[in-house]
Image (cartoon, rainbow, N blue to C red; front, side, top):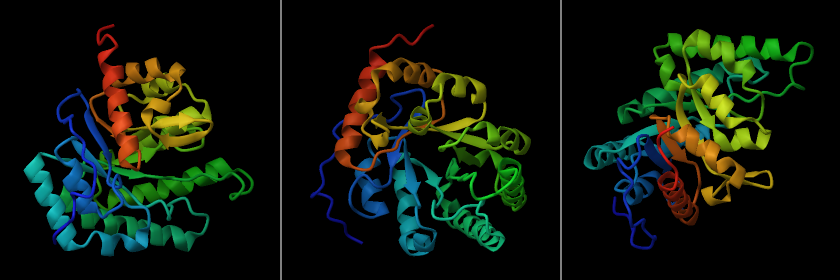
Length: 276
């Protein structure tokens, strides 16, 4: 398929192998499909976060031919992928039948994208205390543990499943992650909105953090360009990044925000000493 890419603005500086960590961004920087986005970005970043928001559209948007193209671009540009699994379904759904269907859907999706050799499958596990009645945390934990165990026992390597920090205390996931040897997606924006100490979080879970979602936060709104990050968070973010060698995904969703974020990160990195 031919794509009209000249209608889009392009990055002008490559950040491949620029940092000790892999730098990446999302597959929805341009208002287009997966392949055009990757074609526009592949020469400039180390990794692409393939966003799969709606579970029922995965088969049509990620057809075999699209996966072929993404695989070819990976080889051509020495590019890797991570997969953000759909957010419209949850293994913590209060309805048992929906949970079972969710696990089956997720396993089918993981099998479908395996040819892309994704380093990580990022998974949202929502928690709502009001849904589970008495003793909600323990019931939720039991449900989550059982369903994550099913995924691991199906053959998905536990360390490739990264549980994302969301809008609840991550302590309720801690024992599950350690027991199953899962990974963590540390979403710094989500943690900032919660008011969490991001350095303390990173220090506690360092060995398990495989991917960091990085974006700006202002007035309780996240996924903004990185230059909107509160100044008080600049040094803590830098201190985390200089100790990290996984993937940092600039989780923004348009070109202007990506360009601003790349510029800001480069300045932050170069203006701070790398040695303690």
